[in-house]
Image (cartoon, rainbow, N blue to C red; front, side):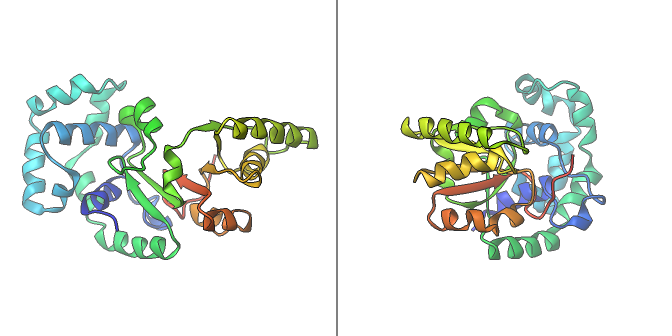
Length: 247
């Protein structure tokens, strides 16, 4: 069960169906990174935006230049003033008004076994917070064993069109890292990515897939189903679960 605060973050940062993609402008990584920092520095939470009177009070603070002093000391994004200017009353108001779309999406996602975590969740990848800091994804969608996200992993990235030699080399490398108690983390794309994950799973080990393509599609794939059932695999994405990869 996700919290009301997580629902508010979803309203700010996610689409809930394909028809919304061209209609709404959700907050970017940088925009949410600054906005979340600003809210925290001004002792506010995203969930408070869902209350109409609290929303108005928050926006009075937002329009007060002195309220940005502390957040600006913490955030050092390039073109920060442009980022701030793009976060407008009308834009945020429109995003948080999508409650009905959110409710329907949550029903679909939960029926498909998709879970959602924000940056405060105990299983949110610590490496994201350590290295990406305020540019960490606001929410992660996932299927499978979220506890694997805290375990040590070695990343594999390679060609989609790989030869048998590439596959054998990948298998050999995976055996080495598994013997050192590391799991594989990769993108679950065709080729080396998928081969490395399957090699780790075939070794009786675990794997993490960080997806850019549809989480719905991947979670239903036969090649991952058994490992998901056995809790030896987790698939995550910062993009809404029904989204499809485009260049």
